[in-house]
Length: 432
Image 1 (spheres, one colour):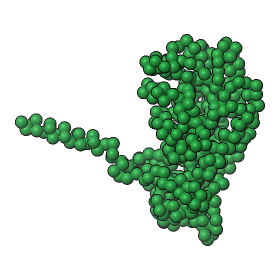
Image 2 (cartoon, rainbow, N blue to C red):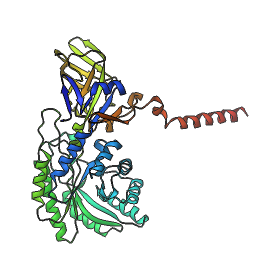
Image 3 (cartoon, rainbow, N blue to C red):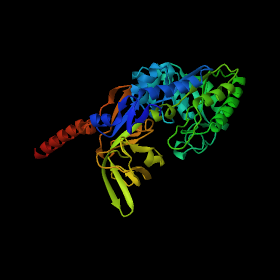
Image 4 (cartoon, one colour):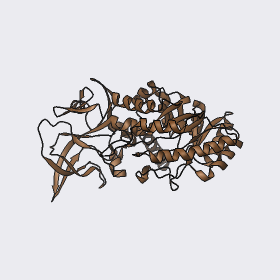
């Protein structure tokens, strides 16, 4: 995280003091470094400079439109999994012809929206989805470009919840069924087969599973071209990990060099779908200490950020480094559970964690929170979602205001008004 650093015990985001942002905008607060985001995107994109390619940022990692706009200006495409992500990507300025649509449950409405937009291609996950896309394309009198997402049954050696390339996962078409699926696709009206797709999981810390999957895809590629299929795109997904704790994932340039060697001599455009590796270490979550409490030998540090703000520790048992925003004097270390205000025993940010002694109104910083933090947040317990700030040097911009109580019921209030009106009319009918 090159652009989050301590100066004399005070944490800075680029040229801005983190604690000052927390005082100005309140907490919980997500803070992103523009320089880090761009640096990470460039590292991935440049890693594949030796082959024709499109770097399609995985929008689900962090979908804030300001961050998408920054990436669009660098030439990024987008990997989307919903109509809402399509809307965000287009609004941010990402060209439709650089957008791929993944996901196992595309609706007819979403398919229509993507066809109207003119996206590059659909990554198709099942035969029934393929038939649905054909049906919608015929209705619109257009042609849908597709690649088939192949499940290569490769173990990514990651958390089971973010593993997507094993036989027991819901994603993709089994490798042994791939040729039959492509032959069906070639016969369907409104379908143009243009590519092969694969994504085996997230937070991968070794290249071997990625390269194993690529080898299997290339075997399929040669089988398909021998049968006359014009495969123009090879989408190898994303999933490269980042350092949360002690992980040492490979640098993108190692991935790029290995892929370039494997694709040597092939007339094909490579597509990658990085998300976490771009956004993960470009963001932090700042939270205020509310209380500390002791239960016998257990110390709890209660903060104002909860599982609704950062779901990863609760959902995956994920580790995030946590430290104080300001340490102008050396504090003794204690072991504590850092917990939020949510009415759930599973509401924690860390358990049995060594942290400096803290007091109410101190700010704690949860690092590596730029991916799957805000994008997975919710209003559980009717808690307004956090604000987001983008720092660029000594300047900063509020890129998402903190929600208000009114925001919590904005979609419900018109329905309530209608219910009250119906109730009054019902009462009047009874009285008559």
